[in-house]
Length: 211
Image (cartoon, rainbow, N blue to C red; front, side, top):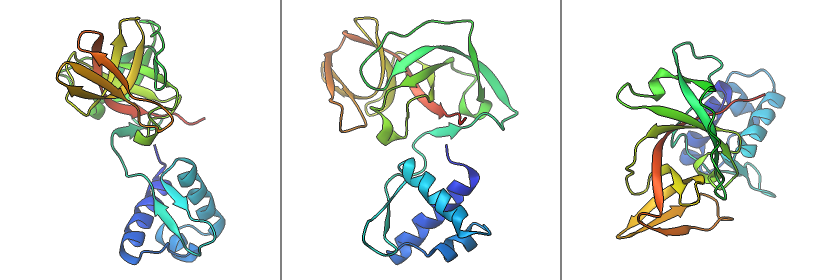
């Protein structure tokens, strides 16, 4: 999740670069988001780059490119939300190699009510690994999962394998084969036959906490 100022700057950069094909000056950015100092802009740019939203091009003046769009999934920091519901946090899910999900029904997490629906049940899983970073899903995030045994082609789902391991991947269905597709070029797609895995739910949103 981006802070308010980070999002303001990202939206301004995206619009400016699309219209002018160059990055705005620090002075223009400072005025656009109502900051008093250019050092504040530098911190915002650095944070956007570290989160993978932009990339500064070396050895080129005022050169920057947008590398990620806001937002494929609803993302919330629940520190400031007052309209919350409790869902069970039942363990850890791998965004990498599959790992065993640890059941802990006594632990719960607060999620915004506008992230969930009264018509479905939900649970939270803590993400471990980096295989979904190109979808903006990072190690330590909480994946909010809507319970269902069905998933549309191309959606991200929590999947249980025959070895009783759970992983979070994009799903591709082709006749009697199911492919678990990562969102990181460092990881490989895995192939299963229908019946070898079970869909536990689909990704509804991501909650991220900052220390």
